[in-house]
Amino acid sequence: MSHIVFLDSATLPVPVPRPRSSDRWTERLSTREHELIDALADADIAITNKVPLRSDTLRQLPKLKYICVAASGYDSVDVAYCHEHDIQVSNVPAYAASSVAEHVIGCIFMLRRQLLSYNQLAASAWTSSPVFCVHGAPIHDIRGATLGLIGLGAIGKEVMRIATALGMRVLVSERKGNTAARPGYTLFDTVIANSDVVSLHCPLSDDTKGLIGERELSMMRPTAVLINTARGALVDERALEAALFRQSIAGAALDVLQLEPPHEQHRFVTGQPDNLLLTPHVAWASSSAVETLARAVSANVKSFLEQRTLNRVA
Image (cartoon, rainbow, N blue to C red; front, side, top):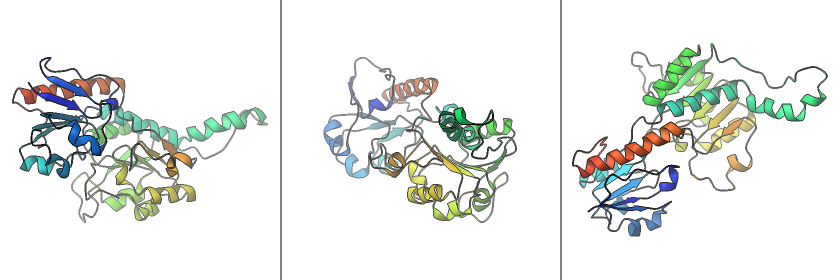
C-alpha cells in the first residue's frame, strides 16, 4: 500500500479522484517549506502544485519515489536531483492552454480598449457629462495591432491562433541573446521594440529569470502593454513599477508575481497603478481546465502505481 501526500490541495477547487481506494491518501491544504520533512516522512508519492521540492529537502526523504506536479510548469521541483536519485517526476502538460489563452486575449481587450479606465469614468463622470459620452484615455484597436509572443508552447500557440483570427499581426520571439532567428521567429529585441502587446509564455529558468527588466521596458513603445501569465520572476517588478508610474509603457496585466501570495505591503497590491490589471494567478483556472487537471493528476499517479509513468519529465 502506497502513501500519497497532496501538499497543497487548496490550490485546486475540486478534489482529485483517488486512483486506488487501498492506498493511504493524505491531503494538506497547504504546506510550508519547514513542514515538508514531517509531511513526507513516510510518503512514497508526493503531489505538489507550487510547494517547492529542492535537493536539500529531497535528500532527507529516502522513501519518496514519485512526484506528480499538479501543473504544467515544474520549476518548483529539482528534476536534476530526482533524475540522479531515481525519483520519477510527472507534470500535466497543456491542460490549461485554452484557459490561459482566453485570459490573455481578455487582458488585451481590457488594456487596449481601456475598459478599466472607462468603467471608473462611468461611475465618476458620466452623469455630469455635457454630452452623451465621456472621453478619456485613448482607445486602441485590436485588429491590426502587433502581438509579440515570448515562448511558443501550447499556450503561446493558442494565443497566436486566437490573435490571428482577431486580425492581429503576430511576432514570435527568438530566444533572448540569439543573434540569428530561426524561420518563423524574430529576434528578441525586434519583438520587444515593435510590438503593441508583449505576452510572456516561456518557462522560468536561470536563462529567463528577469527576462523583462529596465532595458526591455525602455525599448517598448509608449503605447505598448505587457502581459505575464507565466511566472512572476520573468519580470523585474521594480522596473515594471517604475515604467507604469512613469507611463513609459501604456499598461500591464499580471496574473503572476515573484512571491505568491504577495505580502500585504506589496507595491502592486497597495499602490496599484491605474494602468495595471492584477489577477491572483487564476488564468489557468477555468472550470473545464480545473476538472481536466484533477483527472490528469489522478491518471498520472495511477500510471506510476501501474509502473507505466505518464507525462514523465524526470
